[in-house]
Length: 454
Image: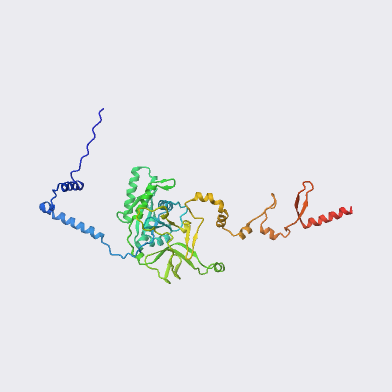
């Protein structure tokens, strides 16, 4: 059977690409007419229909008007604080898994536990502070005030839940942040037609609640307990290049999302009166307006307080130096999560603490070198004091005897330390240490006297 001849490529004779090619060809030949096409053929560009022209004009003006915004003063400094990314969703929808996958995508580190804000360097000019929002209404209210971007997780197999709509209603009060939807549990929908219908239905419902054209991301499934790398990489790229419009409420108020807290109260005062006034130190990036010293602040859930001192500290998760390169190297992919026990360094006002129990990249080398500093590791991992351990410890003198604690020794006065007497063993010829008790000594003396009388 003869092979069929392949079809030759047909060049385009119309369209913008063909027009550009034709112009280049005429320019090479030197036949370019400098006159504009309008001047050469005015009738071809004349108004054919006044109604259509008016309609086009009105539509163009409407589109231009929609793009107009009231000018907003952007108070963002030259080195901006990290962008606050809040992950919202109902329980068991995959919030913690998404945060772990995003952190692994940006920093190549695997987190075991998600606690508090986690700050990472996502690019040459951007940092992210990722925080998980619980289903508590108070947490939603607090995080809606400070969020720059909201990742709203939706269980595709179940649909929208009330927690999603509650958070959307709360966001409308203080200014609507950027919202990106993320559909999870799509692997439960096996039928391709049903999957397509579900995506379309949830997308239109999401657009109705947020705004038309809001970005909705799809996470198709999980591999070994994690989302697929390419999908997480695409989501990370979207977050890294996204632009944010400054919100009026946030730019007119100074606020801090504290990533670390220390209690500076005297421990003796706390011991005497557990309800005494505390002195605490909060650490975090300042956003919005300037925070003045001795000013009044509000801590959600605690009340209004006066700031005693405001100090500037070195950046624990600094941006990389400005260099002409496209990507970050491994040293510049920093992560700062003191509440999650990650980072290794803790910055204080007058000191820098090194956490040896933190996550390090070279775990295998540490395990090999661990016997060299085993004593240091045991002291670091100690939870109770030596006195407490001694009080709770018990000792057994003999194999089948009952273990004795400190209480038994204090209560029973008869358990006293016996005297030591060294004796020579006649059979073996070695010196043995014999325990001598007081009552045995008396009995031994009496028996010796009886032997002498006999």
